[in-house]
Amino acid sequence: MALTNIWTGSDHYLCDAELAQAFHMARVLGMPLLIEGEPGTGKTELPIQFSKDNDLELFIFPVGSKSTLEQFVAKFDHVKYLRDSQVEVLNAQREEKGLDPLSTSGRSTEVLDDYVMMGPGAKAFSKPHSVLLIDEIDKAPREFPNDLLFALSHRKFILPESGKVIEVSEEEMPAIVITSNREQELPTAFKGRCIYHYISFPSAQMMLEIMRKHFPDADDELVEKCIGLFYQLRNLGLERAPSTRELLNWFKYLQTFSKSEALAKISAREGMGILVKTENDLKRVK
Image (tube, rainbow, N blue to C red; front, side, top):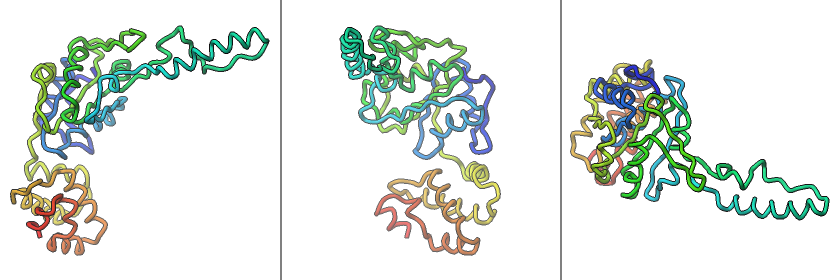
């Protein structure tokens, strides 16, 4: 496991007590942490900031609708293997003619591991005390989380073709964080292999602390005005409520103006395209 102390965040990331406890339990037990919650609530940033803060190697697998276990673990390069096999035949012929051999870049067709391209999963399991992020697993085909069950249960991967086993002990297990926006329900058996946490949307006070993490020198009045309007928008019952990420982007934009100009833009509700993402919502806001 990467570290067994309770991590409560860094200069750039605020980790509340419940999330810190869940992350700690996952690392102590050598289990993945499955985090669900609204988009933009900091799920993805947790492992990124944790690895930076503790100088740990980070491996990321962004999940898509066509993601497979092979992409995540490793795949065998059949084209390269076939090409090198042909080169070896040619080299035998060239040797008979006294010609210099063609290069295979040090690979040998007798060593199948030379042709295995490891993915983020196998790399993380090969690197003790690393961090592994499986991002937005709810976008994956149904079979993908089920295919992960063996690896999560036994803490090992079997590489294709070569049959090499990459295994890690509970003590050296990477800190694994899996995020989900709940676009689809995950299999019960998969959830059973994880520590679960749901990130509730931050309160106004928590949001103020988050803003201070990202903009420590920001003007107090400007921060409070932004947060006030932000929560007004969230309470309107919009089709898509603005997220923390969008608030930070909006404030970053406002900081390119003087304080008086920024306050005027807040009052006039300028720059709403950063916070609001549908035509109907934009009409309601304006």
